[in-house]
Image (cartoon, rainbow, N blue to C red; front, side, top):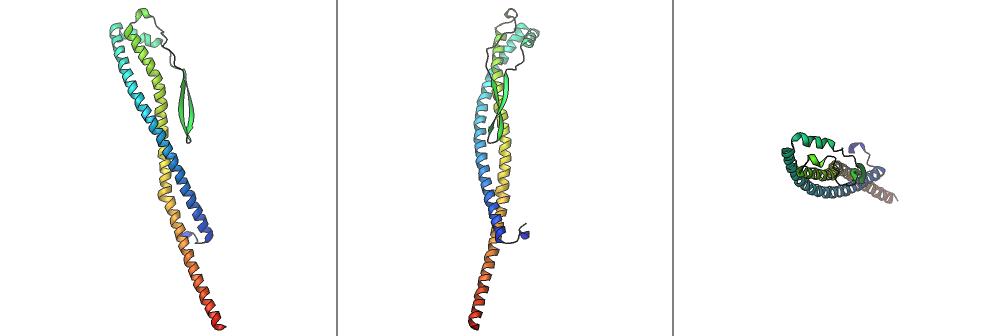
Length: 207
């Protein structure tokens, strides 16, 4: 590429402008990457806490469910499970973090409504249903956080790739181009100065 560019002042100015633009671009990408990393790390800490909480609730829920299956029978528990309506009380919105659209799940927490007769159930089933009801809301939050982490991670990867291209390819290329043109122009200026000096001496001798 450099061999095809004439070492002129106009091309030097263009190369310098491209170099400055690339450096500013790299600085912006570096700042964006740092903000995204901080955001992602905070969400990862939150996700870790939620996963631990969910494991504990799941453990209690499955223990109660196992006891309900033993005391009531799997068929009875299955019939109760079929009576519980599908969760629809949430809305998925999005908000932007440095240009990355990440999800925001809106919902209202409600107490568990019993859609079954207490006459045919027992405490173990009540406990299991209450625990799984808690898990439902945790799943909303965890889905929001984990999807946000994934999208931020993908954007960090893209931003890193673009920053690396600027730092390792574009900036060195324009630095070399500016250096090459500058050196050629400086050499030309020295030659012109020497030539003028020689001409002046010749004129003085003739005079």
